[in-house]
Length: 247
Image 1 (cartoon, rainbow, N blue to C red):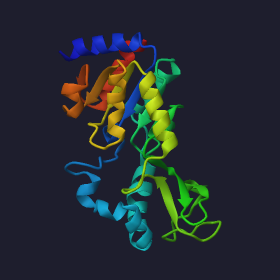
Image 2 (cartoon, rainbow, N blue to C red; image 1 turned 30 degrees about the horizontal axis):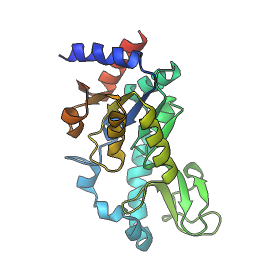
Image 3 (cartoon, rainbow, N blue to C red; image 1 turned 120 degrees about the vertical axis):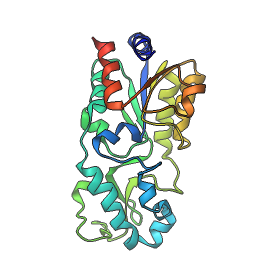
Image 4 (cartoon, rainbow, N blue to C red; image 1 turned 60 degrees about the horizontal axis):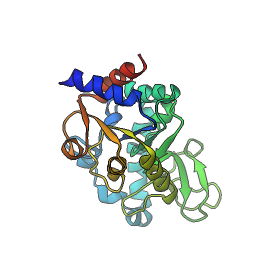
């Protein structure tokens, strides 16, 4: 079944007018980043309530050491895996219009992908909650926590979406526009539990597009949205698919 599905999925992708990818935590697991949900996930070890924006503003001295540990030390060590590299290769060959990712690890960009809509933001930037200036995270020392704003001394917050925060409207618009145009969507490493991001493949489907899903096990997409399901690791199945498309 799987090889048959792979050949059919490759054929659809080969002839796509506008293909996109929608990625989640599962694509980065093989880069050493644990998923947030499920057994062994980040939220099984850390209290997600600490990462609610109001709590952070009230208790920055408690939350910042956790932010450093999870989002800067752990994510900072990660490198792109074969799945990220395969998507970058597909884009370079003119076969992928862009990626919408729920991940904040910037591994798609590190792999060479150019059009990446980061639905939940990224760790690359920080923003001061007082003067609203943006800073490159690499320029901010984390020796003192919370790190003070270099401009006004205010509280810096990593530029990714905390609980209780809305999705940036420009990113939501760009991601939705791409989904409306796409006639093929690769869903990789996500089951779509997180809303509103998880609606993106449904938008593709509603506009007549085909869904190719790569996941370790079936998800909420598999039976009602997915057209071709390639079961297995993202780092194995994605390169297989891309090789079948590019030859």
